[in-house]
Length: 293
Image (tube, rainbow, N blue to C red; front, side):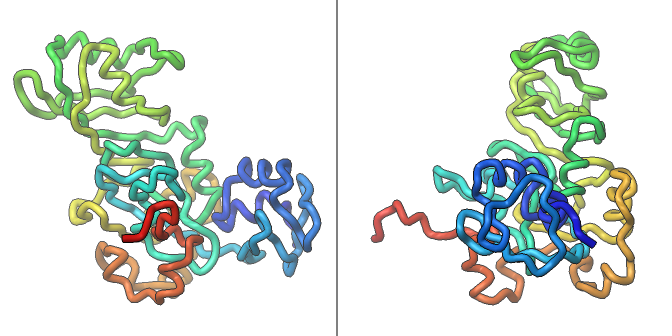
């Protein structure tokens, strides 16, 4: 059955629908060596290229996967970084087709739970503001402010430079004096929003960790820099929440049953050199602007 090119490529994890539309309008995407058109349908077998490079795609929907990754501080959530800083995608396992799509972002100084998927449609729905999926953070806040008044203001709403914002929930979790730990919950993901909210009431976030996203918590045994696949039950929890078809448990287990056993690091996987050196997998490639020693 023919499907629109934006939907097919998004489902394969090659980019969001909006991103694919931008490629088309910029003339970067071709189908059988001809410029792609918005709304164009694919039946299967077409040769796609982006910026002249072949795009590996399939009309069949790959079995959806979602990774839980414990992002350490110092990594950026970007496929490629112009400053050659480490990216989270350098630490992820390779995919046969498509690419990993980050569900939301964490800034370079924030650690904790980062969900990634090979299903662009799932990623888009989990990130869209209309979904109102909860993001929960543990924040260590420094400052001489009145706790009760600050919480009241943050849950009622404060004005930021990009509009009003608030936490849905805030609770004190420990600490004394000028350094206190708070659990903060909000249902959107604006740039550095948690940090800016606390600044608005006189606090400064000195440490920030995301511990939960859309009902999925950061596993206790998941150390920094490690990843683990969500189980079929967890994956279907997200699929139901996004009104997407559930994944067949048997099929998911048959594809790679060992993925659910324990957290892993990329260096521990038995992956061929070809995959590790291929930029499409998001692995680190040498910065050719740097002189060789």
